[in-house]
Image (cartoon, rainbow, N blue to C red; front, side, top):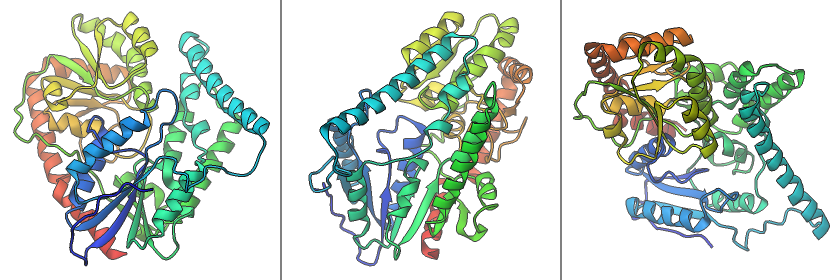
Length: 445
């Protein structure tokens, strides 16, 4: 049984089914923020339906009831949107193929032991100098995707209901393209090229094994092949578009950036005497960035700035928090921040990313808050922000530290960078203009 809200819109409006792996609500992280922002605009000229899996996945996941409550809140925001929810309905049997109880128990234990091994290896890596943090947390060995059989039956049912366009978002759902109806136009929103992220992570392994490179190429070929099931592919940056154009006809790819849902255009600049890092530790590029910062950059900063504070937002494991703060008492983990713009205002944002592709929402959030930022080439990749104009950029630990020290001591430079970044953001990433680009893609299909 589907939980539905029926929209009252003109019958000539384009019908668009959006299949999402996450509920884009509340606006407590960058991913939710930008997806919410785009859908909020698209629903003005499209009849939107959203398909979601609201089952609980794992002991630490949000329970199904909580996810259902979040959807109810989202419905109040979007009363004109239709929601299709999968929660393990009997009509979509989750039985894959007949097997004995003994086989099912063994299958469950196999999955449980794999999870336990991964947790044990990560713990050992964190506490042993011989450990390889990049390998232990890499997405390379977690990029092979499989789906619940009942969920696949749900998607097949919903997607064959006569929509004009079906839009799938995120790598996790890329392979659903094989199930979607052949006679319906399909769009994939590629938030992050997974094979680029995998390449970044492998480059950070202490030792590369030949099997790493074999798997890297296998997954890359699989990702590119799956993308070819879609009529059009949307990347968030020109950089990602140019990479994909080596493998897929360029006319099938459009760079269509996204921006955050709430912009505080009138927030004033405030001189900065502290630092801030935005991002949750369960996203490994964030985890790697903070650990690299603490290991190689922070000791250099301490030599010249004996008294300062670095605030880290988002959800982090207690184990990570204790390990980091024990060695670095100037770091404070503050968790989820309700008003991020007000929190970042008066702080320098650090974005020491070394892994990933796509668009760094944390940079847009910093700009929105008039928070000058220091980042790496990877962090600003695909965004038109320039070194010493709208930000400071360094890939070397010493240069990164020098940029932080210089910026926190030069209040006029802070203000100039923050103002120019705000102007550039409003010029290039205006939400209404970005929405028009996305709508033009649909019209062209």
